[in-house]
Length: 517
Image 1 (spheres, rainbow, N blue to C red):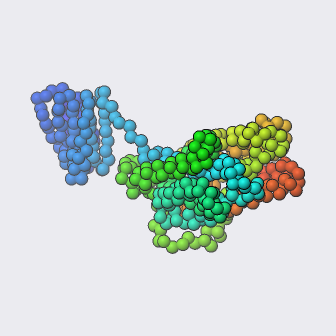
Image 2 (spheres, rainbow, N blue to C red):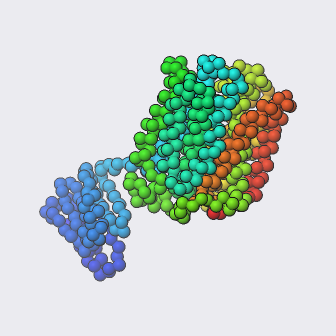
Image 3 (cartoon, rainbow, N blue to C red):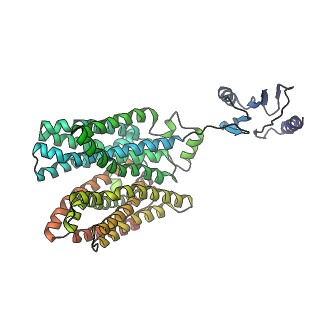
């Protein structure tokens, strides 16, 4: 009877002090003589076979109702439920097994990584399928460049518009509409190609218009769903999916083209988009506070240290104010430089390997594809390191500057070293290093938009992404003219490296992790 004596003693002592907070404890008393006992603390013990349960009776009507509604079946162990101050705690003893619940924010980032993979894979499909399309429809080489660039015609305009829509309506709705529309455009691409040239160019531009909302939606939604010291890792996981989309598209498209035909890969990837939508629409919300699935403890973790952005009034963002601040221009210049170098490597490396090292196109494609897998890994590492530094107490400003400096100095040095490569294997190594370091920018300028302008982050992202897309068009077209003018790639690679170094200086002078707007 030692356990009951302890209960009575604690009950008597607690009745003398009304300020004593309820606490949870238990006893594995084996006697079945006493079926129920209520203490002054308001806990009633019930003995059912070998299971002992304690129920709160006198904390509050809300806590009591919650406790009664949440009764659970247990195994051969003891369970205690305490609903004091609205907090549920569970203590499991013996061989009782507790179910493991995956946090909702992890499900959100998993869905985000999947759609970012699909986003990039849908782009790659056309890059591969354009070869049999050109043979079938007798397209000239010059027209191939027009078709490939038509995606960017829509993409350059939708980034800023899509970012503003994300700020007003939330990332969930805007991304859902974006996926639905770009999946439709993907499905209609083979039909448009067979119908007319104008129809094909219009569908590709519409495809780019729909995909322009993806990155602003990702950035804003993840900032809502993750605490500050986990956000870089979440973006790293999502962008890993984005980079792996290249691999998925390059691997699956040739197989489907040979087995089904030209329409095969377009049908598959558009169907995957609709399948993804079926989970996204019903399981995700723009803000975790609106989710019926997120637990109170997880919500407290997500909201820790956050300052809620002002409620949107529906008014247009103050463009002149946003563009009047140097931290905004630091982000814009960083995005321009990042896209300049990224698309130079993406678009011209197969030609580089064929021209400089005289390897065939199949080998050149293999050398060019290697970096994408390493980018996915290094991007996640960058996010994890960034979060660890913030948890260790380093300022957000310092962490953003460190990550972005690595993301630009690393590729700049690698491109300079590429000028001295004497074999395609060594050149592929330097390109892989360059792109791996460039993924550290994900923990730099890509996150900094939420730091300086949480209310207008989608719009800031859109402005920066539009400028970056324009830089991608100029660098992709300009590389060809530059190489033709000078007769080599080395000079243009040196110009690109110099741009990396100059932007690094500007970033470290004017970037900040503090809120500006």
